[in-house]
Image (cartoon, rainbow over all chains, first blue to last red):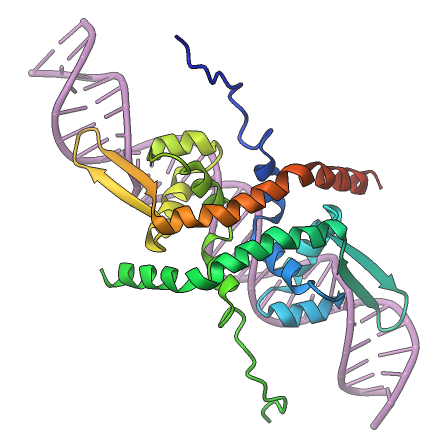
Length: 123
Length: 123
DNA sequence: TCTCATAGTCTTCTTTCTAGACTAGATCGC
DNA sequence: GCGATCTAGTCTAGAAAGAAGACTATGAGA
């Protein structure tokens, strides 16, 4: 009897929605940027300062991707010096919900990870 | 002259638990590996095949990190040819819960992202 | 006039990732 | 006996990505 799960040998990221999403927001900068935008719209340099250790280039690229994918809206005010504001779209805000769950998990388990890692280093 | 705003000026990832966690599992390979390990223990090459487009070195490194951080347990059977099995620890399994939330979000929203991206490309 | 500010981009250098060759040691075919 | 084969990696070389910092235009303020 052949395997009943005769799946069409799906390509790495083909039909899998998590792959499609991870390819885009599966890096720490995207997550941190979205988190930084929770609550209020922010300007480019504000985000730089808030995230702290992201390079201009990386933030620029991350925001561009987030905008492309519909998580973030970018508004340019034709002033001098230039002013550009970033804010979450509806989709971006809805993403905060699973992200909150992740943060909620991280909080109580953060210590356990640190301990495990410590134990590993000692060994 | 020292900065006058003498705020605690928290280091980028210092007290923030999400930073601590993202630094470790905030890449797509870790998430995909954990997902692949859901349900049953797997061998190295099984994981390679299942994930599909990860390199040996990256999988090796990812598993090493996940083991260090206490998400995964590695068991070596001294046979020839060698057999090594990877399985989730309690911590690893508990992480699947927030991850499921993420996947649950991804499923209905995957299409919206693709559409947003498409629209962006056309423009 | 000189300096500062913003929101990026461009360039250079460093780090990371990928692809593929290579390893050990028992077993199988010949 | 002789070589090919299996696994779970490591090693190496080349390719790609990221970081740091210089640089841009424009107007305001000293």
